[in-house]
Length: 307
Image (cartoon, rainbow, N blue to C red; front, top):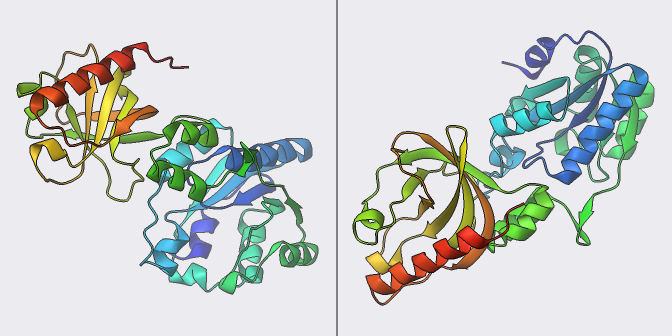
């Protein structure tokens, strides 16, 4: 399906105020843009719209670069709709789209989305060869009949909020800073699969082995206080990420022990939110040492303040 045919399906009832981007994480910087779109649309009696893409441009333009995502496309769209956007428009990021000039892309947005206002950040670019910077877009707006509003970046703790900065914090295991930068706790969702059951049989702490998409961002190896969500219920939990070195080398796993849970989890969807890092991944001298550490982790998880 072509870019034009995808856009032609939208058919907005009124003219639109629009922003464009991947919006991975839908962090406070993204939310600032989105809320400004809503505000401007309401003032002018336009519809509000977000144009996003089915994958990050880097996946096509530089596939050798590994860029794990913070939120899936479905999660992004859901958050945007919860923020009150009228239209979330998902375009396929294809070689055809890459070849569109800034003028061609803007013309399509003006024609099919009835775009009258475009709101972007200061470093935004659009079109083939990244030619469509904010100055070019303002000139195109004068020609095609839309205005461009450029917003300043959002900062948290004197650092510009960006998806890249959040990924870097996750690599360090700094999930508390990630919470502040995202404006919510970092979450991973997957299906509970069968593990080797040693957590329950050997240590007395049964764990759910979470199968996570290989392209999803994952915090650094170690132990974490988490919240586990299953079937509408929430439990305090302890999650360990790593290769379980005490048991010998193995693949990376994400294992979660749900406090005060008694039930069957295999094959069910489980979401975990990261609250606090407890420790780095450690190889213990004995199973007894590991068991004592898990007991300590669980005690902390019961007492830690969770807002």
